[in-house]
Length: 387
Image 1 (cartoon, helix red, strand yellow):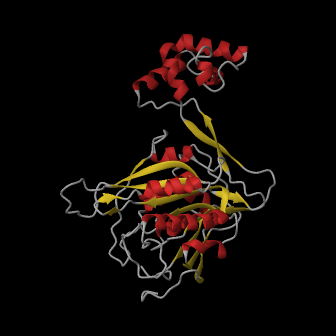
Image 2 (cartoon, helix red, strand yellow):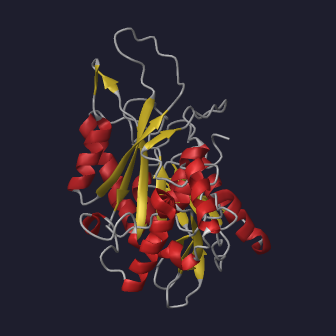
Image 3 (cartoon, rainbow, N blue to C red):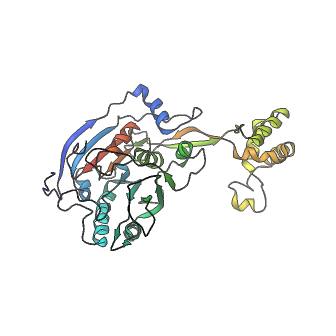
């Protein structure tokens, strides 16, 4: 295939690998890899072990070899327009015009939509191209075309790099970022922001700028995908397991605790006062239920305010009088995973499935298996060509 043989439209299976994960160790490995804290209840094991399957073929024909509605997350980095020629006729990336490139990507996304679950997501890493002394605007063109084709754009993530390839340009700044665009089919998609925030944001929403360094590679592939980009997308948008009967992903149940971060002086003082006056767990829960206030504007901006029982209001008022301004600390108490919401049909479960239709060296599939997910990889080159 390296001599330019045309594989447009072909999809040939070259390798089917099973990744056998010891079920006894699975929960431990999931917690370790996904950033679960010691207080969290880990997710239950899927009933079937994850797999790894690699195909040679065109990214516009994945539905020929992958079952409909079976993929949870597509994460990929297609060839950028007019950047690199991989020597295969019909390849995406060497079209004559930017519009032809976008059309080819939309054609691929139409096919991906067939295999993607309604709860699934697509994360596409796409860079822009300077052409005739100006930026062409590929990411924006792709977003607009995808929206017109029925996709929803949930985020335009900035992949910020602290280094990059040398660039001798003298009349503009060197580019040190790319885009990762998050597309979904439906509004009700799987998204584990809590798990992601635990791992990458110290419990808070980390925002849409990802500071991830480049991966150096001395092999034949010039643009290897950093593992951390894949890990972030999987943590956010690929469930631990999915029911094989109804297709519902398992989702975490998150609850507040009475625990504060005692490294903060205000939190430490709040805990001291609560212990000194023997405030009960019911007092703390009442504070958390009412929030900063249970009246006025708070009824508009705070979920649940104005709906609490008189007993809850009484306990909250009593605790706030004792704590003074320190009561606010308990409205930001630590949260933990207290369980996992599974479907009611009781069908067997499988690990979440990712697909990379431009897999290159296969980094995304390797990361998926390491995180106990299943992975499909497709590329115009035979699997292993870039190893």
